Amino acid sequence: MKAPSLETIEAFLVAGSLEQTEARRRAPLVFEDFQWIGFDTLSMEAHSSPFCSPFCIPEYRFGDTGFSIDFAEQADVIKTEWIGGTGMDRGHLQLFSRASVIGRKLIPYLWHQPGKLRDSLRNPAQHLDTVEEIWWLDRWLDPQGIQSSVILRDDSDKDVDWSFTLGDGALSINLEVKRLCGDCLRHTRGRTFKIDVFDRFCKKKVIQKFRKSEPTEVNVLALSLFGEIDRDVQMIVGEWLSNRQDVIDAVIITSREARRKSCFDFHFRNQKAQYLRPFLREPTYEDQSLIFSLIVPIDIPGLPKMPKQ
Image (cartoon, rainbow, N blue to C red):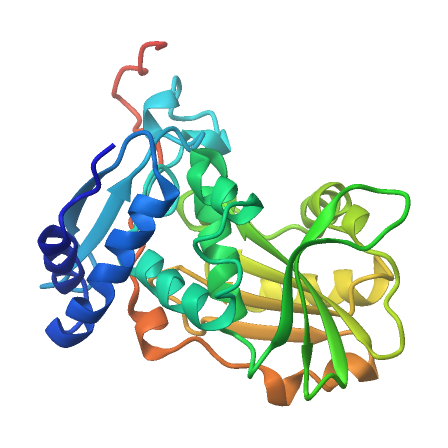
């Protein structure tokens, strides 16, 4: 598959919120990374931002991610895979360009090497999650000895996304990153963030990867939401962290929601987790300027039901 040209990539980055000089610096990195990944299919497009005119949302498509508005049969039935848009059935080119910079800076010994990282980036169903995992590495001040896909438990083959040290080796961090794609339904469907749903998700997708941490070790769950970090989210995450489990020491949250009041939040369960605070880096101005436009089926009274696909 032939990757989009260098000039096309640069033009799409400029169409977003990047200045020309920075777009020219990143475009060769993205071009090289697209060739390294080797998607079976790859195309790019840009949509006008509904929130931040005159900027566009530069996007790229790379195969079946498992999400698409085209899957919808009935608009009044809610299924997570019936969501489309940026970060669902396509990627945000500017966010990928950030991952290209971060990968070269923090994990050069993994970048452009054969292995699980490249395989995950090439797999359409895993690509967007992997880009998010790479982005989260940049939320820490000078992480050292970064390891990918680390198995912590003797009785399980499930691995956490990253392990690394902070403060000249004073703290060891085990980090698991989760994108909660269905979280965007909180706004479009008027849903609330429910602790029982969150608890079940964590028991199935998170807890099984961790063991209890050692005295100088901190187990961290990083959440990327597509809804606002509101009071309900803060209270429920805090309640879950303190009272519903005993292996996660800290939860850190970011949001891709365009109307957010805050895009970064953190919760600590114990004293050693408090030591993370000076090592945390909030999202950059660029991170906060990224716009994700999602497509969710809505039932409109009076219109006929959508026919089954």
